[in-house]
Length: 252
Image (cartoon, rainbow, N blue to C red; front, top):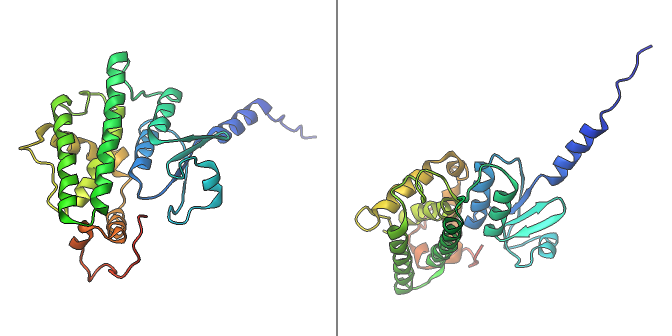
C-alpha cells in the first residue's frame, strides 16, 4: 500500500499569499510616469504583473479604482496605490535594494528633485501638444532652464548622488529617453556646452538594462504616432508619407 505524502499546508499558504501580494501594474504603454514604476520594479528584481489599458478608451473597472483616472496604478493584495512617486516610495519601503539614501536630509533633497523631475516630464508632454512654434520654443526653453538648475546640483556621476543609483535617477530616466526621440524631430539635444554633467548622466541611465529593456524597437514609432495624434507644432516634423496625417486629433 502506497502511503500518500501529506500536503504541506504551510508552504501552500505561503505561495498563495505571495501570489496574492504580487504587485500588478496598470499601465498605458507610452506613459513615462509608468516607466518610473517599472524601472523601480526591475531594479529591485521584483516579480510583478502588468496590464495595459487604452487611456483614450479606459475600461470601467479602471475608472472605478483610479481616483485621478490616470496611470500608473499598482494593485497589491486588493489595495490600490496611485501616483508614480508614491508607488516608488512603497516599493522602496517594502523591498530590499534601497533607492533612497540613508541620510534623512539627503533623502528629503532627493524627494524634492524627484518632484522637480516630474515638472520636467510635463514639459516634455507640453512640447508635443503646443500648436504654435513660439509656444513650443517657450516650453523647450523652460525645460532647459530647469535642467540648468539640475546641472548645478548633480554629482560628478555616474548617477545623481554619485556611485549609488537612486530614486532621482528613476525619476529622470524616462525624460531623457523621450528627449532622445524628440531630438530626432527638433534640435533639443542636451549638449556638453550647456549641460555637461547631465549629458554624461543621461548616457549612463539610458545604458542601464533596467531602462533599455523598457523601450523595445517599436516604441519610438508608437511615440511618433502619438505625437502625430496630438497635432502640435512638433508633429509637422514627421514624414507625412509614413504617417497618416488625416488621423483625428487626440491626446492619447
